[in-house]
Image (cartoon, rainbow, N blue to C red; front, side, top):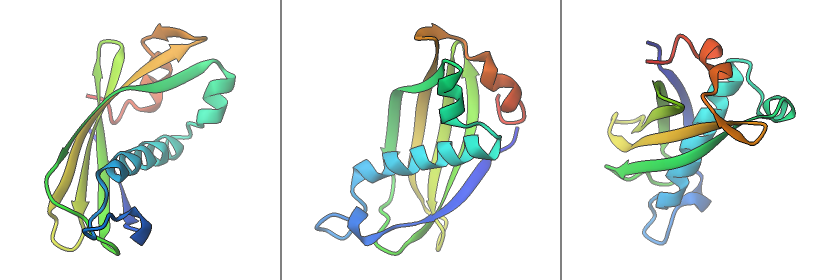
Amino acid sequence: MKSFEIEMKVRDYECDAQGIVNNANYLHYTEVTRHEFMESLGISFGECHELGIDPIVSRADLHYKASLTGGDSFLSSLTVERKGAKLIFHQTIRRKSDGAVCCEAAIEVAVLINGKLSRGDYFDEKMRDYIV
């Protein structure tokens, strides 16, 4: 099974009064990572929607381990698990300078086809090297 990884950098406006990344931004980081992952596989959310295929987040479980601060570079990675009709993205955010795990997340995605819950087999072929 493969892992997908991208590098990102904390922008100052993502930090709170204590100078650390506001917790809500980690959810944004995980979303950016999933979008970049899909694009790397040639999957366009716009084209999927036009075909009536809509992957939607149904649950997000984030565990904060260490803080990122303004200017930090970090690595955001993911692997994918198929569990019944759901795709679960297991995501990790690590500070680049010391490798510290800052956040671990499990993001559950359901797939709607023409507005109805489906297994989302459309994604299985494209993600085959990444799905457990």
